[in-house]
Amino acid sequence: MRIAAIYDIHANLPALEAVLQDIREARIDHVVVGGDVLPGPMPQETLACLHDLALDIPVEFIQGNGDRVVLAQMRGTESSEVPEQFREVIRWNAQQLHPEHERWLASWPKTLRLQIRGLGEVLFCHATPRSDTEVFTRLTPEDRLLPVFETEEVNGAVVVCGHTHMQFDRNIGRVRVVNAGSVGMPFGPPSAYWLSFEPDVQLRHTPYDLAKAAERIRDTQYPQAQDFAARNVLEPPSEEKTLEAFTRVELKS
Image (cartoon, rainbow, N blue to C red; front, side, top):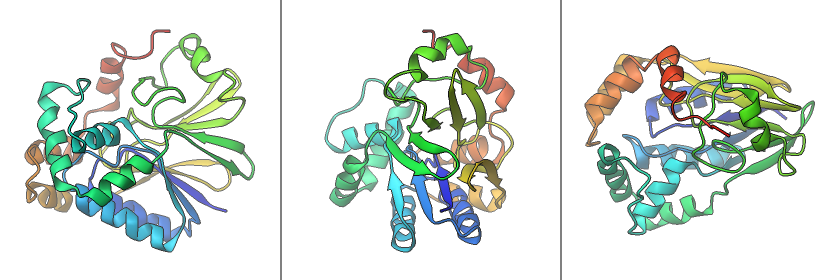
């Protein structure tokens, strides 16, 4: 069975559409959506696209911190963890969605386990197995991460995560940890990043028409449409600058 993992779509529908075309051409049998489908500029359309995909092949979802705070907003609670400059985005995303979306988002678990031929048990989480917000990168010292990954919950599984929007494949003690990267908001060269198991892990990226995608995003009513098109599609932050910024907020113990 060929499996794909797509993370951190952030309602960038053009990027998702490009990745799904690659997934279909690769004859993928099963898709894991690893959280942070939301927030972003095209939330209704993105959820509809994923719903349609699930009519063709099995799709399983886990909840990311972005999905969680949008869900809370739909239920009338504004999360204090969201910085002030992003609260308008969360409110707008919540306003675009309907009760059936709320029920769907609420049904997504925090983690997912699959048996994958050649790898054994694979644990999918959004950020780390214990949290959907913890930050670590390919450069985070191993000693800080051992208490997170060498645990009974992980127990030797391969771990797939996202959240930091940069791909990597590294070992933490006896655990292999792979970051799928971001479909819709990459930190690094413009593209849509994801991974597949064939059966071993393949870090992949899908080029797409960035100018056309930026135009489609600018045509939405998303409060930060211009900024998203410019900074997340056409010229994303570099991996080097993002790694430097993340050292200030990454796991310390």
